[in-house]
Length: 120
View 1: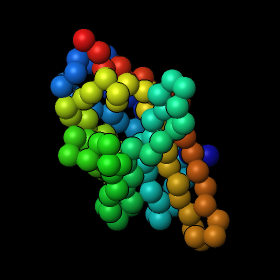
View 2: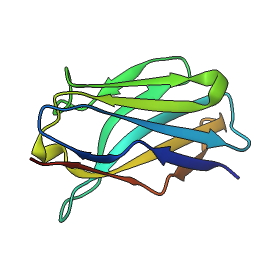
View 3: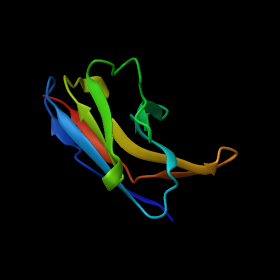
View 4: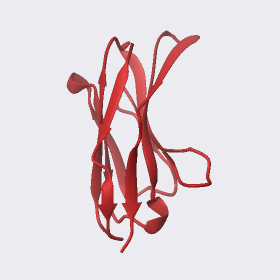
């Protein structure tokens, strides 16, 4: 069973920066992708950024140029560097892992979430 533990959330002023971390433990297939999602009050959960085990990345248009996803495969850890934060970035941020041995049979895990609040 895979466990995801997030850290790094908190309160920051507009224009500030935060770095989220998510450490994965357990049996993880080499083929995998890790991602950050967020959910603001009253809104649906949305993808923020994703990164494959090979290092390919994808960022939502709303965070391009401000957020950067990266990972350390040796530590099974994914990071989200968030710069130039805006009040609309306020949300609970969730770490996600999808991994597979065969593409037709994927496994998915979620972290417990970490609150990010951008406010003056």
